[in-house]
Length: 450
Image 1 (cartoon, rainbow, N blue to C red):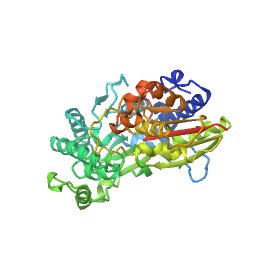
Image 2 (image 1 turned 90 degrees about the horizontal axis):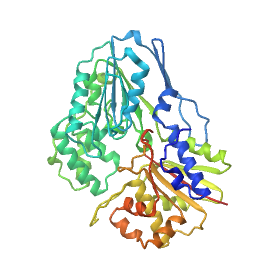
Image 3 (image 1 turned 180 degrees about the horizontal axis):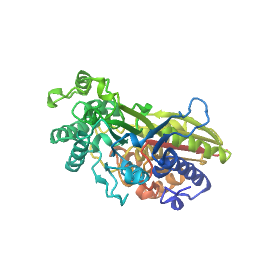
């Protein structure tokens, strides 16, 4: 198994922490980008195969099985486009598999790391969570590629989380997206509401990319970072038919007291002909990571239970709620995406969802509002190793509480300023991970000894 947590040894200061970290590693390994592509994409001669491994059904959570075989001889040209976190590495791995069969590829990602020596694949490094001029430059190159596609061309896309910000088609969209992110994030809007607006200020999102690529054959391999795995929401659904309307976008803005006239809202493509040759596949999601973590826990002879694959709510309360559910000798697992509400904050520090979830638990332990003995550990971390800063998340137990008290840190003040990164930087409990796994949102682990 590959090691993804770079400071594993430094964090594994007691046996319970080590178990939690090993469980987390199992989840990260299951969504490792290179491993996922090696498991699910095969090129044998001129046959390109996409398939999903079979998982044993476990309670209400079971993976699905799909398979597609394509004869590459049927196409004159073959293209790759990658949009979102992890898409550059995924595109590079697929480009290597295709070899000389690939005509051209373009990917935009947040990672500035060498991914390929293939001269046919161009990778751009864009900004996230706010788009930038570099994002526009890359998106225009992608649009240029798609506009020249013909009926006998094949386009394979990797659509990943973060694509809503990374794919930005114009200066107008750049300006309006910045306003959307700032005002809706401050107001506490969820990701689905955010993406409804993003779709309707863009010519690329909400099925716009499928329209541009028509009449080529399009296969989009979609990596879900959203609750419920709604493919029309992931990266704002560039190749998925959009059922939301301009009127709904206006209503979302009004809900949060924002004047819709501040935006030049567009209607998304509603002619279904643009989607008839497009196949959208849920390629990887948090189910893959959580099932692997559950298996690892059971290998350790720990009783494991999946609390939720669609866990949401306020970040600072997320781990506290899970602690209430844990039992002696048990492992509780969750995946989803929480929300950090910035409204009313006097000062904004450095941190993000997972670090804030961990800090919320520390605050509850110190105050205390969480009655639990000194025999548990909790982790919250971003699956791609990037919790909107260089840390992936944080790990918490009573060692953390002791260090905080010794350093005279007041978690409540750090929480008020959303400054979780600097709190855990001082206690030494930040998780740092290699950014080589897919972004399937957030993962949480809680263990309590017998």
